[in-house]
Length: 123
Image 1 (tube, rainbow, N blue to C red):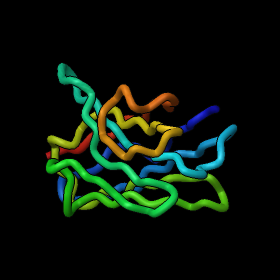
Image 2 (image 1 turned 45 degrees about the horizontal axis):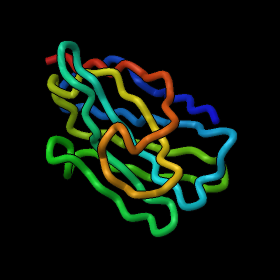
Image 3 (image 1 turned 90 degrees about the horizontal axis):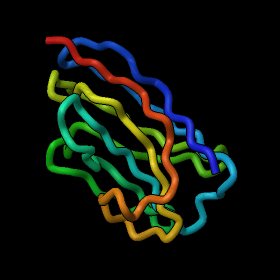
Image 4 (image 1 turned 90 degrees about the vertical axis):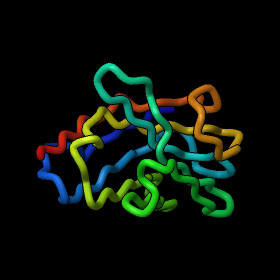
């Protein structure tokens, strides 16, 4: 199973970015797919998750209302649309898959991880 996250970059505060995560070697099936992020000097934080069999979504309080997670089942891609970006959103963003599909935003539930993509928000 391989995950490749891309779409990061430098954006001004208030701007938007869309991250993509291409998943190969596994069909979404009953899995849960999530985005985590890790800012410098901070622990990795789960921010958004989508449960594949019913499209239920979960968001952290820090991104709720600004970020939207979605997926393209035909192409095995998960997206994270990020609007209203703030300097505090600067981090490396990772996608991850939980094949059991629990939809809980904790690292130990996720077996497969992508390599991360850098998002930098300037003030």
